[in-house]
Amino acid sequence: MKNKKLILWGIILLVMAASFIVWKKPTSLGLDLVGGSRIVLEAQTTDTIAKITQDMMDGLKFAIEKRVNALGVSETQVQQMSETRLLIEIPNIKDPKLAREFLGDTAELEFKRPVMDGDSVVDWETTGLTGNDLKKASVSTDPAGGWVVLLEFNDEGTRKFATLTKELVGKPMAIFFNGELMSSPNVNEQITGGHAQISGNFTYDDAKKMVDFLNAGALPVPAKIVEESMVSPTLGADSLHKSLVAGLIGLGLVALFMIFWYRVPGVIACIALSIYAVLNFAVFKIIPVTLTLAGIAGFILSIGMAVDANILIFERTKEELRAGRTLYTAIEAGFERAFTSIFDSNTTTIITCVILYLLGSSIVKGFALTLAIGVIISMFSAITVTRNFMHVLFGTGQLKHPGWFGLKESEINAAYEATETKRENAKFGVLD
Image 1: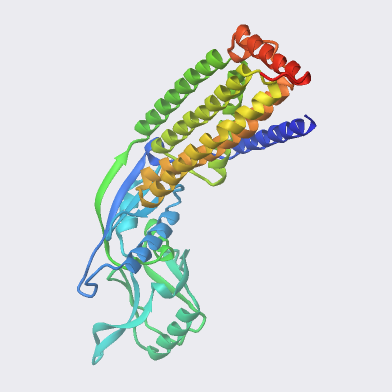
Image 2 (image 1 turned 60 degrees about the horizontal axis):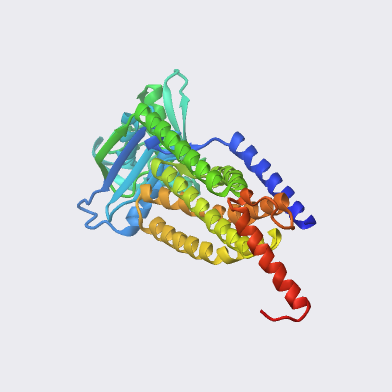
């Protein structure tokens, strides 16, 4: 019993820690709950790109994720949905137009040398120095107070830039952004420090936009937005409200059933389910899990499975009590006999969740993840929390109040009498 009380105190401390996490750490909500934009981006073939490969899609996904991070929008999902398409879900975005421009623009920065005809520039040759050679970009002002973009190259870019400026002393050097000539300053001397400046009568917003593009990186292949849908914040809030109401109604009905049918163990199960919910949300916030409508559905379904585990345990325990077992023996036997069924059903559910998570879309992934987490934690709440609460509350003797378990006194008395008779017979060597 001493060990049981130590475990009980451990559970209490765990619940306190989980409650602190739930209180302090914000909940991550998907766009179907807070509103936002859902965009499908398709990679495009060109004269030089005949086929879109998986490596190109991986590079495109990485670049898009960097751009989304530059937008300052959290909990964005980027995933590949076909051989040439990416699905981007951006919750709680305030400027959908900015997202469209930011995701679809290629952001190609190129430094070019002039092709001269006498003293005139007739074209620009490619130098190989591009935005891929940048370390970072930033917004600044020139001596006249105009906005400019400052560039800092990485080691390889610094070497290329030094070589290029050495070759072009006394000549212009062009800076192109997305194929547009931004500036073509004359090079007065070799620049070895790895820094350059783009000026072009920028407003602050224009300069900031270019800096964000450059820091996010160029897209490895051209991409075009082919589908877009918006979820309004009002619709998202309404969905969240209805989900919470549905969940609370479901929990209330389950609690009433458990208490009506199993009496005191039913109350213990409700307490265990409350602990389960707190632990579940704490894990959601630690991972973190972005909650969507599908994710909430997975969580509510896992509650049902947690209740199912308690029902199996209580029914087995009642069978043992009907057979004349003491409280401690009946509770232990009930848990042991129910464990195999609980473990098998939960294992098959987790296997299904893994398959859904690996092969499903983002919505299905959310459902699978929350269901799997809930199932794992439900086993802990049923096997550890409920078990220890029952031992601490009921002790080890005989069941003096059968109604606490939803049993009739006649069932228990008959069982105890039969058990005592067997003990007496065994004592005096009498066989049944």
